[in-house]
Amino acid sequence: MTDLYPLLFEPVLKDYIWGGRNLEILGRKLPPEGIIAESWEIAGHRDGNTHVANGYLSGLSLTDIHAMLGLNLIGTNNEWAEEQNKFPLLIKLLDANRPLSIQVHPNDDYALENEGNELGKTEMWVVLQADLDAEIILGVKAGTTAENFRAAIEDGRLEPFLHHIPVKTGDHVCVPAGSLHAIMGGLIVAEIQQNSNTTYRVYDWNRVGADGNPRPLHVDKALDVINFNQVEPTLSPPKLIDRQNGIERQELCRNRYFVTERLIMETGSTFEGICDGRTLEIWGILEGEAQVNEETISAVQFILLPAALGPFAIAAQTNSTLLRIYAPE
Image (cartoon, one colour):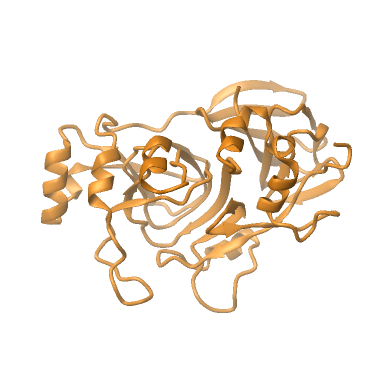
């Protein structure tokens, strides 16, 4: 597959009610009017399919590319996804101008049984910008059970059972399937997740959607999948992998679907790797400018390296911060 190359994509924008105009700060070209909540950066889902923006594959959707290349695109570590005929990951930018709903995502088994040919969703967030009082909800308070949580939903008094965590720019949050969670207002985050759009809401702040009606809740399904043993979790610090030659590598999250690293690179430093057929790599630049083989990327931008690409090099043109995402063995 000597004609493979790093792939850039045109984002797909979503206008959910909790969004704003803040993605313009990150360089996103937004419609002249209205709110934008999400920019799907690399996506091959029925609800959003990004198209290649560079090279001879320009104009083709990620789904098209996956159909053409199969495991040469996603890698043998993602053979489970190939069996489901799915691209494994979805990369987003979120403008949480207002709080998202209090929600939970199912695991694969529950989603495939109850949502047709849809995966569950394990995800993570990297905080790109945060107001001084920004926070998230993750997990439950001690003493929370399915029974008292259901009663609280019915009574509209969820707050005593919700675990709030302050967050700031640079923080990361690992969110396994089954985690009760909400991104609150005043945050811009990058989200790395399974390729799924299944969300079970338990509370939506009594808001109405664009049609003037409340957005649907999914209380019974949510109660089926909430992990009530996730009691008052804390944020995990980055794990140092290596620091040499002007590059610091940190591991942020690791699960069965993806590993996310953060690389802090000094000007002139180069990270060399190889896509040897086992896994794709997705790189995102959060600060600075870097060259990925022959392609230059700048903040905030994501690029997909096919699994069969072969050798690659990430060269920092300025002091840069990047995310590296790949599938574990």
